[in-house]
Length: 238
Image 1 (cartoon, one colour):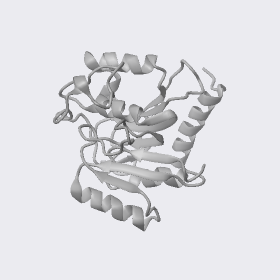
Image 2 (cartoon, rainbow, N blue to C red):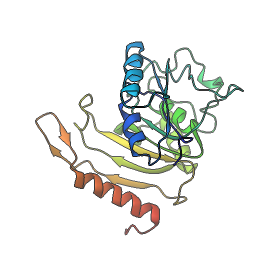
Image 3 (tube, helix red, strand yellow):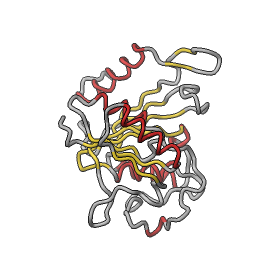
């Protein structure tokens, strides 16, 4: 991997997820992130400098209504890789935006997300932000797997477009700030296993560190990684 490859987080917070992902890149990647909160943007910029990523670009603003990374022709900039842990179930995601006439064309072909729930808005922005062979991982609440109406339609369209490589259902209490169960979605514009999506139920994995927090062991993480790799290589046994 060369430094010319790019990684993006549309809701980057203090940038820790971007830095972790960039550390895994064998030859480095150029980092791009956007964050709504002004104070957190300053923290993210400082974080990038402290970790030797001075050329990282961190922009401030609402990613859904005002994405800052654009091409010269006004279309959405796309990236080789993306990671995201967006705010869950945002009720005001469409303020300052007309989703029916989105200038960045993020909802065309998939559907308009529920007016009171922004989970799929972030997912569709995430998908649109990947290059033609791009891939990424995004954390979403468990409810995105089974909620109905507009969300069911979008979910069906994303699966039919063959964009979801795998989904891991994670246990509760894995993140300090979130008590509800979450899912990890692996998105790929160029899947190895065409027409197939791997579902892993990891809700009973991990162990309680204390009464409030669960953690995965290195073995747990390796087991998930091995399962995913076997699926991609076509060697996963049913």
